[in-house]
Image 1 (tube, helix red, strand yellow):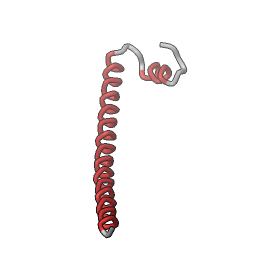
Image 2 (cartoon, helix red, strand yellow):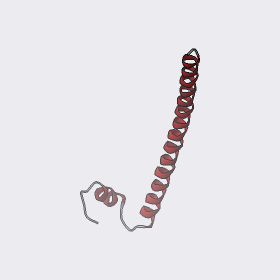
Image 3 (cartoon, rainbow, N blue to C red):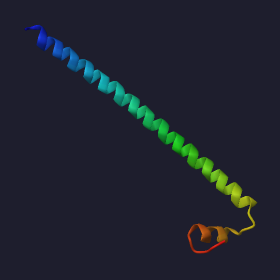
Length: 72
């Protein structure tokens, strides 16, 4: 019967370690996700600016449209 408590303590410690490892992995995944979102946002900004440069609309017209104040 003495083996039971020792075994359960080892299992508890193993699970605790697993939780720490998974927590670290989760944090790294979150950081990667946030970086990818920032990259996408920067790409969208670039595409928006390129579309504006190619358009025949004024800055004010584009702003009014994006703010829902005017139809282009």
